[in-house]
Image 1 (cartoon, helix red, strand yellow):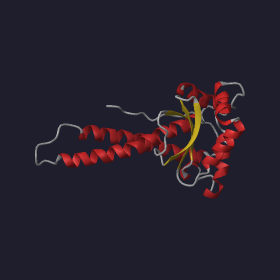
Image 2 (cartoon, rainbow, N blue to C red):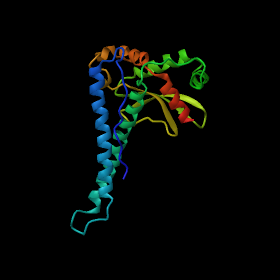
Image 3 (tube, rainbow, N blue to C red):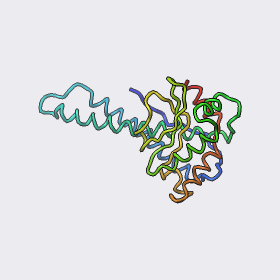
Amino acid sequence: MINFTQKIFNLSELKGISAKNIEEHLKLYAGYVKNTNIILEKIEELRKPARPTGAGGDETNGYLLTELQRRLAFEFGGMRNHEYYFSSLENGTKPLSQENKLMEAISKSFGSYENWLTTFKGLAMTKGIGWAMLSFDKQTGQLLNHWVDEQHIGHLVSTSPVLALDMWEHAYVYDYPTSEKKKYIDAFFENLNWSIIEKNFIEAQ
């Protein structure tokens, strides 16, 4: 059976995002990993041969399996989204080079880096809980900005995430009130290691 391991991220001191907020945020990530494994284990258990008549009933198992599969999308999405998020903040800040494949793709898809950044930051201000995502569509060779509700609703089919910005309140609540979440968005970009994000892009192709 598949079992996912919690990743350890090499995070140094960040500008505008406190160690306290990161500490609490990582606990939530750990919970997503744990819950993903628990759900997969339970699904495997319920898929075992049916018990004798009168000992439970296949209809009950069928209902439980359906609900567990539904919940799996949320927990698995939370696990993976956070791995993209935290990895982009690893090993210190590194700017995006003006001459690399990712910059070329951003310019091709959005006209310029400045146009993309303005659009992406505007997307991140979407009301509600979720994620601002930059993903790559291999079929068209285009980068796409999109919003993911909660952890799993809105992922674009056949695309691969390149950059993920967590816009749940837990991502910034220890540092900024909800009315100032724009400051958190700016802080996130000040701390990015673009070499990691470029690696995501290259692997997506």
